[in-house]
Image (cartoon, rainbow, N blue to C red; front, side, top):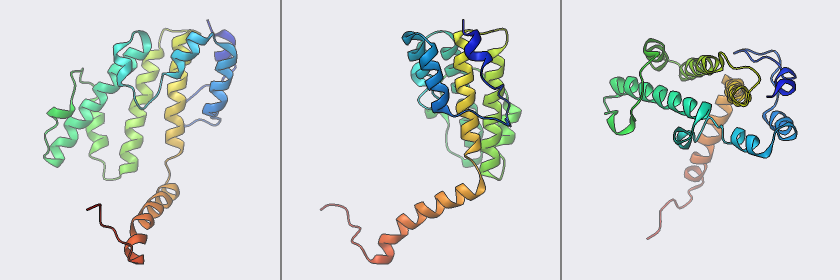
Length: 184
């Protein structure tokens, strides 16, 4: 049980006033958790979740929910693009269809991504229900923290700066007349 660890952390909401750093959180966990629990916590990542569906417990539940969410996103996007979604979809439950449809039909990619992150946050809150001070709660907190950091990194100025940097790196060789041919 992780009474002290969890009670010492700020409560996470979708728009937190105080957001602990991921490195700060993992350092605190490393100090207070047995190595086996910390290793399990460390495997809880928003990206590269697929291997978790073979496991057990809360990580498996999260991976299956994430897979189902991505399936629904693929289905909805295939309707607007005309591409078949079947090669990209694994078996899974369908839920949140209306909210996913609203998100993927949003004209703004930023608003669409924020809506999908909000759905993920709600799913994690649902997984947390009925659990108190357990390893599952620490894992869910870590996943929520990753989501919130991802949300906080999304803003117009950063996006424009990132786009400009990428665009300039592509455009520079063309302007400079560099040879762009690929091997012979």
